[in-house]
Picture 1 (cartoon, rainbow, N blue to C red):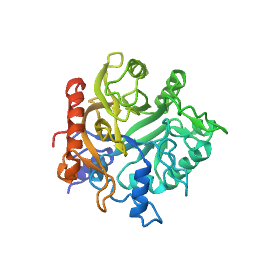
Picture 2: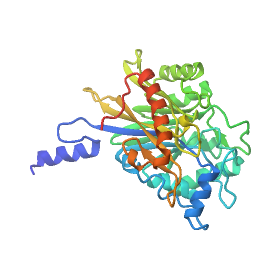
Picture 3: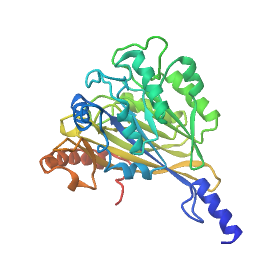
Picture 4: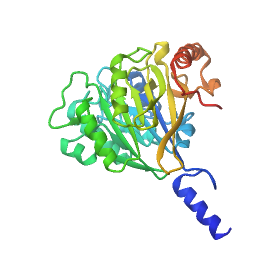
Length: 362
């Protein structure tokens, strides 16, 4: 190998280029709400022999897809409250092994600003932060103190040579007020604008804002979501990723004419895994967003595509499993009608309302 080719190959590797002569790029992957209802806890404990909570099989089918991304993000909608009294709805608390299984499936970041983050009050919210730190998982959205929030925002990650800033906000915490100094990133336009500005000034080339918003079980976004999305676009963000409704909602690429760039807006990715029962809540979507550099070397959101998956309920020795849409043979026969209902509903929304965000070609 000549020195020229060696150096070019090294640069391509360090900057995320696919091959000699191709432009550097990074692929970000997002999914929705990682829930943990009582039936999920019970099955994990059963499979762990009553002594531990075993989630090893929950994400095995979709893990290759998650690992294939350069950086993967999910919404952790349960506090890691510490044992032994774990619980499901309405006040969630899950074991650390749940977050560990998500990490091992390929997730790099967990969002913690959601309406269930204070279910076990400030102690569990703080414990969630320390547990994620111990597990080596990036996280944003809740902070032990206001001082810690100020020290950790902006959060900027180097992904294939792209400096990507991440922010996370929630509409509320189910009426449970933060206590003892715990800091939850609530939706507040003034604070959001300030933190976006700080993130950009700190060197973020791409800014991602994850929003916990919308109305549960409604398949279309509402005016409040659209208003907030337009506000975020005006602040110059590049990706807006939504969750909370527990069902999918449309995805759109919107043009920011002021800055001359495209912005990805995802209103809701639905559930990633849960024990919910209605057809629209039985699955969710993943979205892949690609970042590239233009001819002037400026980082840009380039394009996005989605796919779907189904949360199969346990059967025999199987735990709850996230089954990708391209592996329907892995769905238990008795549950395929539920998968078909979910797929039909999701496809109807995406086909009609998505704008320039197609399904992944396989």
